[in-house]
Length: 320
Image 1 (spheres, rainbow, N blue to C red):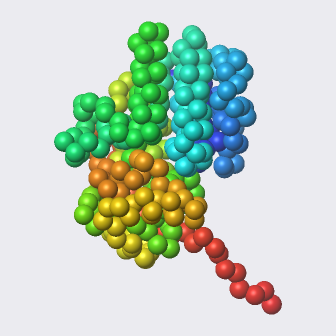
Image 2: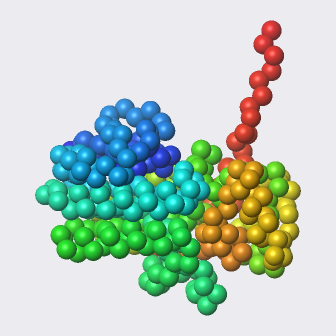
Image 3: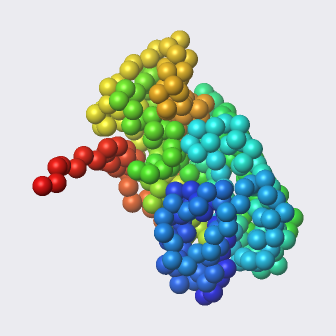
């Protein structure tokens, strides 16, 4: 199995560059190639990188088919209000999925495709399971959830048609010190709103744990969906207090005003984050341990603490 060719779409993101750095240390990986609209966020030793816009479909197809990868990891997913606004996030994610997954399907050596998804695909209907497992029906109720479900559908249809394995990692919201996350950005504001009437629990996952999950899934050629969530849960009010922020209790009509104010101060609240704040967001992560032999290292409260352990401004004393 040594000398496998691996292509990472979305290598320029924080998660993508972290996955690439992990793959560089894997003995089974031979050639490692990346594609993204932005350059990698960390120094990589052996990976090749191609700076390409998702709209450059012909160029993407050329690069992917020339590499002829054994495994493709598609992390080219733009969460709304993370690296791009909603309109661009939709456009880039759909274009990247069509170009990259379509090009991968033309590669003779392709054995497996691993795509990034999220537990937002289950939706937050009031009568839905509070902690859905991978057998739960997909019923996204947010823009981000529908985007992720679309990526899954594209991968699933081409995998069945061409005959390669398709693994779908449904991540809880990915949080890290350097991860551009609307939820993480909101939690680090001096004042953070929360719902008094529906302060429901949610879960997250640390970026390093998410990266390890992708490496494990790629190595074993995962061929089914798996939830990747940190153990434990937390509510917004608990997360706010752990970060020593000022909680702003909201009941109902104030949400619209709060979202507008938050947008103005640089922390937009997209609809999937608003749903998390008002209805919670949980999923059963037991399958990851059974199938991947993988358990996240950090619990949900520890991920929140880790987020707040990094200061926005580092003050350096006067040098004599």
